[in-house]
Image (tube, rainbow, N blue to C red; front, side, top):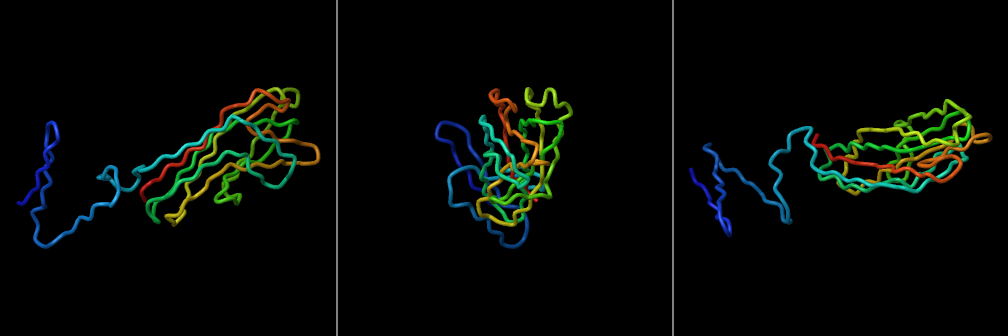
Length: 184
């Protein structure tokens, strides 16, 4: 069996050995700096990107608008999936509800919609409630993808929905969005 030995600058060595099989195989090394991924089995997370936001936003509309919480991730393969997870604060000024969903490349994805409920009109403006939203996307692309959190009101004529803040203002929360590239 043929092998190559690489000796470290100060100590140690790495041996690269050819498999004991007939035929010719080629291993192409990437033309970039970094580490070589040796475990690319299905389900392996190979990239993580996170963004945080401490400012708030208000919606008085029943049309989806961005909250300002977003991130960009570039998949390394067209077959890989992107798992997006968001923890966010919200409030409402009535005993009503609002809607939150992910947006992909500036377009709300209503298939990821979640409904948030305010149970008490008395305390609606005084509290920040926290919620999570998670979805697995299949971008089928190696181009940069932007994932964002969008929101809207249930009843825009009588309600306001607040992202990451109390309805009476102040006391903003810390909201996060995290994207994981998963080998498919």
